[in-house]
Image 1 (tube, rainbow, N blue to C red):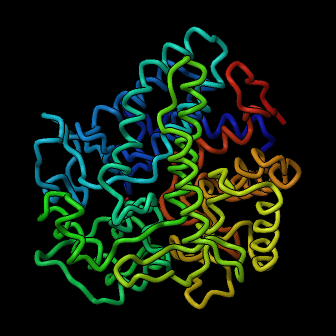
Image 2: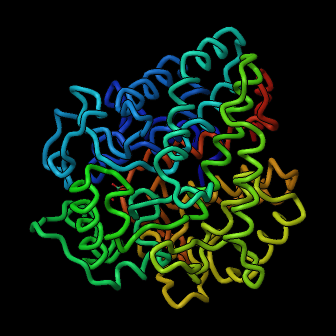
Length: 438
Ligand code: DGY
């Protein structure tokens, strides 16, 4: 088995192979364009080896930002054709920057946290501050977009409007919407199942829902107030909201370093935190659950998304420890940590977000446990994650019981987060890049 220096070198080689100059594709054939949170994870890794290239990765992503602040989930490369759904599915609007081809929905806002952590890993304070100062306003706008355009009825929680926005596309949490049986008006042909076995990807009814929602959202020119009365899918996603909150805290850290006022006032963050606990906490499962706004009720499906609050800094270390222990305990028969516990009826150990282990969700938990001071648990989970990669390669995800690598191969964020787990600062603070090289 590869030792750590060999693993680090192999991870670097994956990122170089996927480097298209201005951005890093997530995977050679499956995902050839630039994806929002994928590039955020990649930037984190590039901070350790190539800060100039890291800056370019983020600049290319931010070129896609709409003038209303939204950072789209896909930034299309005009030189690549044949991907489905292509830019023609996302009609133009005045807030899209001229000349950029993008999708019309967003993705979990990992970027501010990645920029904060990547900045902490830069050795020179002057370089770090100049980079942060240059990015601070677009990153604030990216977060404020959700407060301005994705809240309803006075609740500070953020409304997510498409399973692709959650990043966990076919999570069983969204089965209630798939079951509605909606289908798009236009025919479509999938690209993903020509690259990866259909047994490892979302099913046809899932894609029918995805494309129905694309048509609905695009038909209303991406305006939540316009499509909300018609959509079968509008949710408070526990993971998405936790990532947003983490991003707000990390932007505040950047603001403090730059001597600027915080992006969000403390009372706004406190109100968000209170609403998150009040609306989403489920005592029985010791997890936060998602909320279906169309039906006005919690979604009783338990998944790793319910641990997002640990990453978000939304729970104290006592509760973080209890949540983590309870999840691990029910998943003892699996590789750590399955995206869905095996006791859930929808569990499928080898199908995308319905059971397999993903490196990014493990990374969220590792980073959250570390911030909560639960360093032994964090280190153990980081080691288990790295061992999975060592044994099975830089795959998109791993079978929840055998650990076999599945989905896209040479997957960039698996490589990027392996680099971060191998190199991560023990405590992220500006200039505090004392790395934990093992
Ligand atoms: C997306 O576009 O986010 C989907 O996850 C691709 O499978």
